[in-house]
Amino acid sequence: MSDELSPEKILQTGFAFWPAKTLLSAVELGVFTELATKPANLDELRDRHELHPRGARDFFDTLVALGFLKRDGDGVYSNTPETDSFLDKSKPSYVGGILEMANHRLYPFWADLTTALKTGEQQNESKAGQDMFGNLYSDPERLSEFLRAMSGVSRGANLQIARQFPWSDYKTFVDAGTAQGDLAVQIALANPHLNGIGFDLPPVQPIFEKYAEENGLANRLRFEAGSFFDDPLPKADVVLYGHILHDWDLEEKRHLLKVAYDAVPEGGAVVVYDSIIDNERSKNAFGLMMSLNMLIETEGGFDYTGADCEGWLRDAGFSETRVEHLVGPDSMVIGIK
Image (cartoon, rainbow, N blue to C red; front, side, top):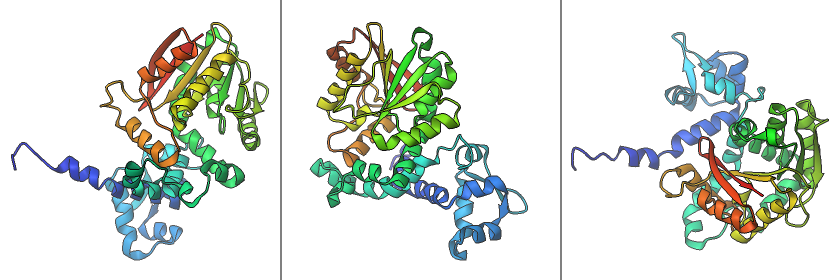
């Protein structure tokens, strides 16, 4: 083997499920939430989380080595600034909801990626004849967990859209597929002149309204129930689809953009954001893997490039389009009517 070649990246990627599952288990156990209240030594942590002595020390020290915990000279463990901020369930900045869902659902389903690649078929609850969204929306507890997860994974992009999009040009917006409503909440908090609508299926309404009220926005945000495949969208100056478009096949994507076009006035806009794949399809690995996740999770969904989406927007009738990076792997595609 040449001295210039190394298998390190291959091996690190091949065993990447080790650090992933270590972190997911720590989130599942509530390690970071507990340590946010009080740092603890090994015996205290082991007792708190009812862990067997054999693996406990290795587990917590692995979290130290991975950079998720700190350990001082007296053997006392504490959170890092990042885990204290983002993985403490008591804080509004908590993003662990999406990791909880990854642990409960996605981690086992991804074991069947090879099968999905060979068959082109979903590898989630559908294999047992169940409907993922049907199961979620029929169980209030699971639905609430899922909607919190969507807020966690979307928070950074939501904050950026609230600041980056030229909201001063508009007065109203509708967040289609609003989930818990974090996108609507962040936009309204950053732009006091705006009024917004959260549009989603009826079971979401109490969760959305509670979240809006908790953020002091019940007077400017309201919920409207409906399906964007069966009902017209509420009229507004701007329609937003946050982490929505990639769930659907091409025909359904085009439908969503057409109903958005019908909902906004001349000069109105649609904002679509996902983990947009770079046009060369060679850099945004997260966006490409998200598309593989859509293969596992949906009947026909896939992620797409900015150029793809701009073309669909123009086909829907939007005269101006542009792509703007948001944060991390997420970008937004904007269409102006």
